[in-house]
Structures are given as structure tokens and as C-alpha cells.
Image (tube, rainbow, N blue to C red; front, side, top):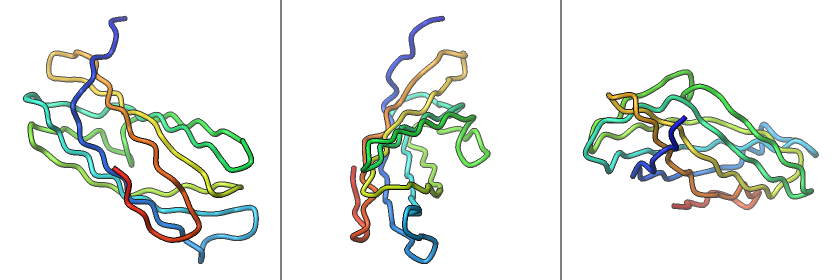
Length: 127
């Protein structure tokens, strides 16, 4: 299998703690992801990979098809925004990952999702 080429997507994530859905040993966070295609060709998000590192050293890996049940197409300059949530046992935690993509010719691509914190202190925007 050919290696994945790096796809120039701009990815920003805005996490927010949800205290009303949390309890000791179970902290829930919502996050909004904004993906913008900075490339000159259309890419489709076909899979996601998340890596969560909790405060106590536990690690969670999540792999799945697309994002929020979709495999969106991103034309040049196109934007896709979605929201999701994660629950961790020990906060603060950190998430990072990548998207696997394909173009119209079936060529594989990858876009890294920058690490962002899951903190109890309130909203923070990381790019």
C-alpha cells in the first residue's frame, strides 16, 4: 500500500467541559471541529483516528469510519464543521489524531489533528 500524502487541511478544535454530564471519575467534554481544505483538489474524509491521554496515564485509541456518521467531501476552500463528545476518567486529558482521506483518483491522504487539552477550567481554543 502506498504511503499517505500529507493533505493541507486547516483543523481547529474547541473543547468544552460539560459539568452537568460529569461526575467524579467520569468527566465529559464536548468539542467542535472545523476542517478547511487548503489544497487545490477535493478530498473525502474516510476514517478518523483519535488518541486520548488521560491525567492518570491511561490511553484510549478510537478508530472509525468518517466523522459523525458521514464521509464528507471537501472541495478546495470547502469547510466542514461537526461536534462530538468524549468522556474520560481522569482530567486534564489530551486528544490528538488524524484523518485518513482519499481524492477523486483514489489516492490516499492524511491530515494530522493537532493536540488539544480537555481541561476542567473552562473553554479554550487551540489551533
